[in-house]
Length: 168
Image 1 (cartoon, rainbow, N blue to C red):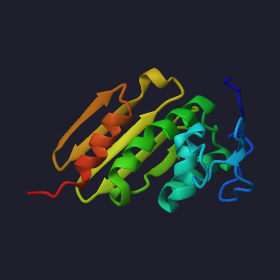
Image 2 (cartoon, one colour):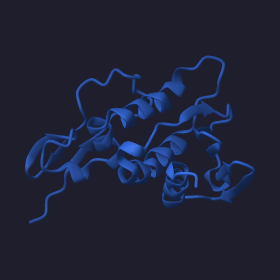
Image 3 (tube, rainbow, N blue to C red):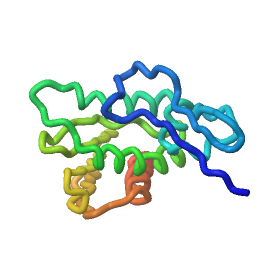
């Protein structure tokens, strides 16, 4: 017989930057467990949360992201934007592993977020406004530049991967 489980995750509005208390828990048929990646039902947790507990660089990025809620005189990001950014960065972080560096995280002061990475003369900017359908990726390699509208996690990974290529 299949039994339903109850997930208890902290609300992003209750998150205090760099002060994670008790880890989120999952109540399932096998009993109560957490999402630190040490127990058997980690697949029930959001991927970003499991990665948060396993990777210091990604945890620092998540802390920067949530710290936007505490910025004075700025409009905090919309919850859907935070969710999209968290879900979209997991693939790039997982595939790039130690070659992934956290972006500079800023608010657009209209409920959106801007992420930017720079490596030498290469730059990648992910613009994620409150209206997610308007998101775009801007890239620049030396004198060449361009944009990709309505990008997803795979496109973000490819952009970041391209920044790590050696200039020939």
